[in-house]
Image 1 (cartoon, one colour):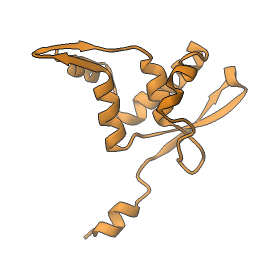
Image 2 (spheres, rainbow, N blue to C red):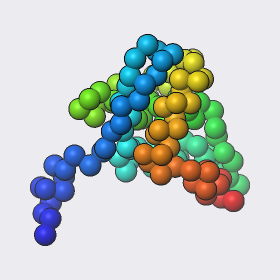
Image 3 (cartoon, one colour):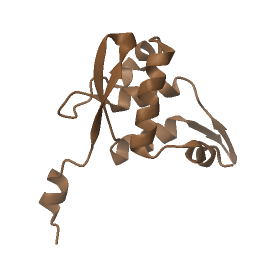
Image 4 (cartoon, rainbow, N blue to C red):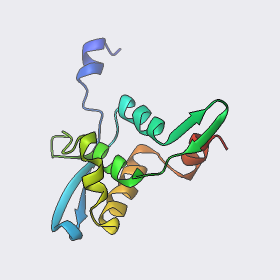
Length: 117
């Protein structure tokens, strides 16, 4: 049976090396922590009363900032970098975004769920 220490010390954020030719090399992309996933989802929805609207502004950059990491899994960016990352090549961001979506189980249904559809 697992104990608290074992759970909290587990390296449970798998990562995958991704070639990004637009940037001249590779990066690692990892899964989100529970808190990061909640923050990401919250940043994609604005709610006023019973009305929910999708906020897709810089969605690729947000997910890239949260998931691009070094070999040990430490994030390379923080949320202050979203605008700068958003100004990078759309095709490079698409490569990373697709891997991050897959690793984190974020699909079209998740976007619909966020929008409340």
